[in-house]
Image: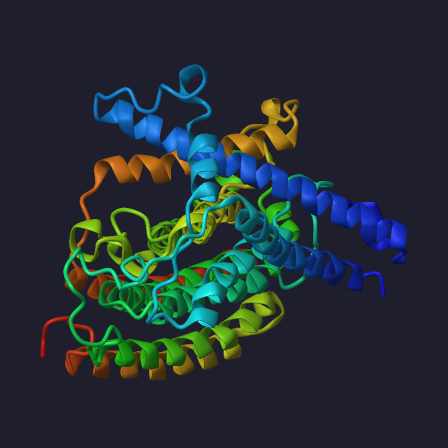
Length: 338
Length: 122
C-alpha cells in the first residue's frame, strides 16, 4: 500500500485501494464475530460456566447464527418514532466507526491512509458516534431510549475531553500526529522505549477514558439493563439493532489498535533479540491483549453509579490529563532539549 | 499531489461504511417478514400502556455538561498544534500555554464550586 500511495492516482490504483478496504472490512467483520464469541466464552469461564457450545464445533458458529437470526427478524418501527431519524441513526453510528480504521498502521509497510493528522482524524470522527446515539434515543420517542441517549451523550462527551488530552503527551514526545511517525518514535529495541512507561499517567487516563467511550463495564450506564432496559436502542429490532452492536465492537477493534499504536509500540518487538518475529505478529499479540483486557474488565467490575461517573471524569481524569501534558513538557525541556 | 491519495482512501472507507448498512438492510428487507399490527407499533414501556409523551423533559445538568465540553474541546484544538511543534518552540510558549490552561482551569474550579459536577446537588 505504501508505494502505491506515493504514486499518482489512476483508476487501477483506486480499485486496489477499494479492494484493500473491502478486505479490511471482511477482516473486521470476522473479528467482531469471534470477539463476541470470545467474550462470551471468557466471561463464561470466569464465572465457572461453559459459555456457548451448541452451534457448530465448540459453539464457534454461535455468533453467525445470531446474526442470521437478526437478519430474518421483523423490523418494527414504532408509530410515534421519527421515521427518518430512526432509520438514519444506526447508519450514522456505523460510518465513523469504520472510517477511523483508515488511519491505523499495522506494520512499517502495511497501512491504509497515511494522514499527517491521524490522531486528530481519529478523535474527530469517533465523536460523531455520540451524535448517532442521541439521535437514536431521541427519534425512538421512548422514555427509556431518551434517558439512555442523554446519559450516553453526557458520558461520552465528558470522557472524550480527558481521552483527547491524554494523547497530547504522546504527540509531544513524537512531534507528530501521524500514527506511523508516533510508532517510529517508540523504536529503540526495548519495551521501555514504548510510550506507556514515559507516559504512564497519559496511558492510565487513556485506558479509563477509552473504556468509558466504548460504553463498556464498569462504565456501561447507557445500557444499564437493570435500570433502562437497553438504553438508547430499546426500540430497535432486527438488523438496525445489529448495526448498533456492530458499531460497539468495531470500536473495540479501533481502540485496541489505537492503544497499540500510541502506547504499546505498534509493530516493534519488546526486545532486540525478538525482532526476528515479524512486526505484524507483535501488533496482533498486543492488540489481542488489549481486547482480552476489555473483556476481563467486564467480568470483574460492577457498574459505577451515575453520580460517581461524571465527578470522576471531570474532577480526576481531566486534571490528571492536563498535569500529564505539563509534566511531559517539563521532561522534554529538562532531559531531551539539553 | 500524491498526498491526496490518502484522502482518496479515507473517502473509500467512508463510502464503504455507508454501503454496508444500506446493502445489509436492503437485503434484509427481502428476507424478513413484514406483518405490522397496531400493538407491535406501540412504544415499548415494559409491557404497560405508554403514559404521556415519549420525549419527556430531562435534567438541565446534561446541558451544563455540554457547555463544559465545548469549552474544553476547543482547548484541545489549541493543544494539538502546540504539542506537534513543541520541540521547535522555546520555554516562552510553555509559559503561554500554562497561562491559557490555568485560565480554563479557573473555569473548571468555578463549575466545581457551583456544584455543576455533582450529579445530585439539585
